[in-house]
Amino acid sequence: MTRDIRLHRWTDLDVKIIEVDGRMSYRDPHTGESAEFDYATWTSPLVSPGFAATQIIPSWIARTPPGTWVQVDLRFTTAAGTTTGWYVLGRWAEDGSTIRRTTVPDQKDTDARVGDDTVFCADGHEASAWQMRVLLLRRAGSGLTPVLHSAGAVASRVPARAAGTPAGVALGSRPPSESGAESAPDSAGSAPDVAPASASRPALALGRVLPVPQFSQRVHRHQNPEWNGGGGTWCSPTSVSMAAAYWGCPPDPADYAWVTNDDPWVNEAAGRTYDHAFKGCGNWAFNTAYAGRLGLDGFVTRLRSLGEVEQFIAAGIPLVLSVSYRAGQVPGADYDTNGHLLMVAGFTATGDPVVNDPAADDNAAVRKVFGRAELEAAWLNASGGVVYVIRPPHRPLPAPPAQANW
Image 1 (cartoon, rainbow, N blue to C red):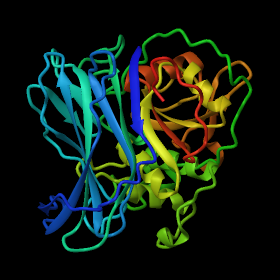
Image 2 (image 1 turned 30 degrees about the vertical axis):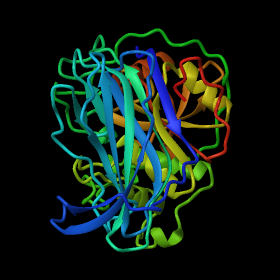
Image 3 (image 1 turned 90 degrees about the vertical axis):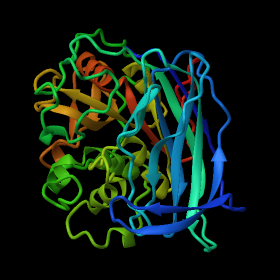
């Protein structure tokens, strides 16, 4: 289990381009087009989590009108006291009119490697401190500006491999697919085993179920196949769309007027979370960043147990969890997945999680009850306890623990 977790965020930043720091040429690897951009830079202080971190996951909220975008970078200080170079964790834009939203593949050196949305520190090069940098970019000579509202990262000390997880699947790593029931086999040939686990003791949210609207990813099968084959793989944007619907923050109707089917919010979210390098809609930070377009605050963190999830449910905040399991290993889940996102909407009177699972044949079948111990193990062993926290900016969070992970 991942126990050492610390999140640090800077909120209410409202950073804009006031003075230009420089100009850069960017050739979009997904379109081949080149353009000049003026940029300004926001750099965070150095943050020490208080332990040697093995993984760091950044997230941010930024508004990027057409003609603007942001680049999110991260570096860290190793336990030996050396400072790494800057790793690019995302080139983000709300739409595709200026650049294609993308991560940067093949970033690896002696200190770390970047796996899409996560920095994995090399053995012996764990992070004693980390720092973020956000470049705010606009077309050269224009008066436009993106706005950075918040930024931060969660640092964790994650065990290298969980009991019951196949060789080659590191605990807390990004699963090879985020697709739910339609996911392809992973490198070991199937979804990771769920290790035996003792469930956390139910406490705060017994019998409380939040009225989260139900959206199915499967009803969007074969729609917009340019985004990782269509809706069968859209568990992450479908879950984010359920969060948006719960908070009453839909996308602008003009944004989804092009969609001709039911639940058009899901198609809209898929298009605005698609990572052109990862070739999927499951980039964790891209999904929480999309929530900012809807007027919501969103960030990625890790929790230690479903007991911590209960604190959010008690506060009226549903959470999106990153899980994986084999069919039958989690009571209530009848499919294999090597990487899936679903929403916990509440708990039964006996403490079992009530989930909105987008891997359902229709919207009515989305609401399910899963076994507590088994889901907890599937979540902690697959992603190290990754969650999306999405809520209105001033909705109070639960009181954080001493080693604050929210």
